[in-house]
Image 1 (cartoon, rainbow over the protein chains, first blue to last red):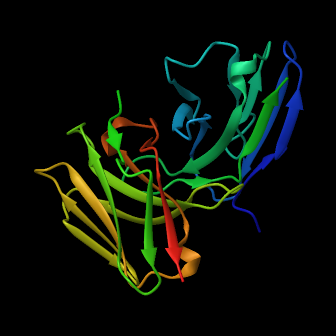
Image 2 (spheres, rainbow over the protein chains, first blue to last red; image 1 turned 180 degrees about the vertical axis):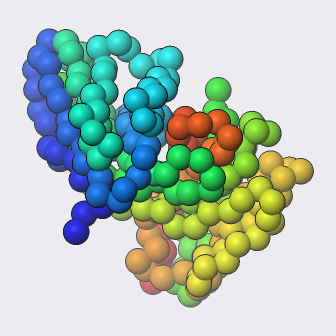
Length: 113
Length: 114
């Protein structure tokens, strides 16, 4: 029973398209995140979302937007895809505050051609 | 500006020996540190963590040491097993900072040789 699941696992799309990656967690966590792992293998936080509070990494272009229909879901929408958006995107969740670990999904490899 | 640094991109250790992975950080606000293990085409999996009020935490074959004055932590794996071959990420957070996620190092690829 997967704790954090994201779909699709692979996504190939053309430049200029708009795409979404879905994420769901069944851990009862109150905070969800999106991370990006670029070609240099750096894992960087893009967004964190808790109870309608959105914290954005200022380096993330505004073509990226998270959407949370409820506490268990945080989807990532990307508009006008660019070649440089090619990366692996990881969704994660945790409990806010205190010393708790984050649980990660299996990742979505996005390739923009 | 890398706030969490893993200066060894890769490490090769013989099976049965000790693996020591190192991590340095620059942000003195960090108070919770974690190690994640990652296999190819999978998400990072939580391994072990340590709070800044401790200097050691042990879980089976895995021990994490924290030296706050040096802003350094290390992960010890004893004995190393073939299944330990993976990329290990050091991560840190400021627990009072709200929902601002983890800051990761670039990872160390651990290779356990038979």
